[in-house]
Image (tube, rainbow, N blue to C red; front, side, top):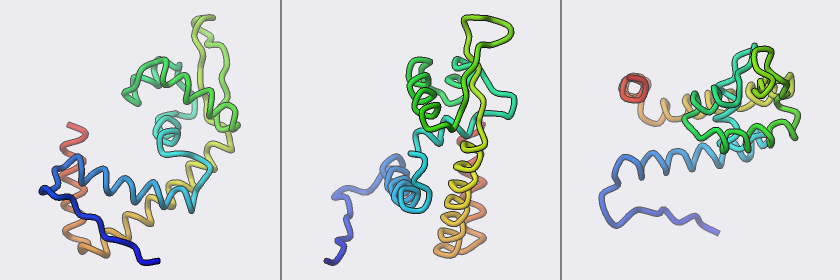
Length: 141
């Protein structure tokens, strides 16, 4: 079966283009690093070695505390994180990454690096470097 190249009827806007690139990335992660879904990866990537409370993690990942809590429960069921009572507040829970979580992050990072390399090869290293710098400036400023 041949793959049909899908093109939108209108000129693609930036969120559409970003979604199309993200779709490529999600497909590659599903094949090469299936341990984590991108949404779970997004939460796991924010965890420092000493952990964060669920509310701190939610703030970092820019999601609701309830939504983050759902991802934390999924990750805990996968043994990617461990959750314990915070020393400073018995009501708060601290989330820490486990060895399995670090391993899954490393495999995902390898896929992300391979995507970076492939896209740089596609558009040229200098154009890719500038694109990354501009995107980082827009995203992180």
